[in-house]
Length: 122
Image 1 (cartoon, rainbow, N blue to C red):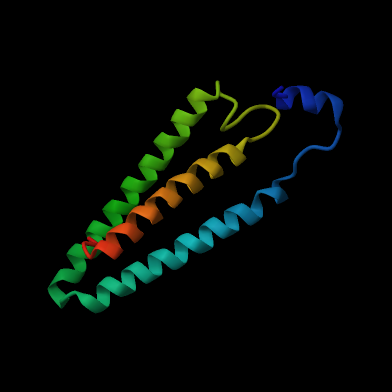
Image 2: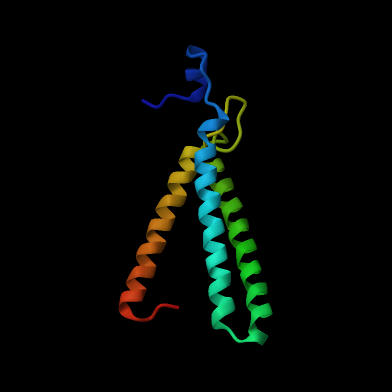
């Protein structure tokens, strides 16, 4: 039996604090920061001088595309959950979203590892 957060908030006075989400955001932001710095450093060291500006422009375009796909994924999940995913009067259901992203990243990691073993990593 699934309990809605509305029903739980009527029974309990203790609400979820924003401090519960800070470690998740901190881990996500730290990971993204380290990934992006490593990505930029890799391409700056391996590309010729005339390719750096073009590659950084493509990198920024790719990051913007990822951001837009991330927003689209959030809207799709919000629509599928009946509007209770992103924002409601009672709180935020981010835990479902993090699990979806974790599963997508695991599939992506498996795909990249298999491509690396086969020797055709892009």
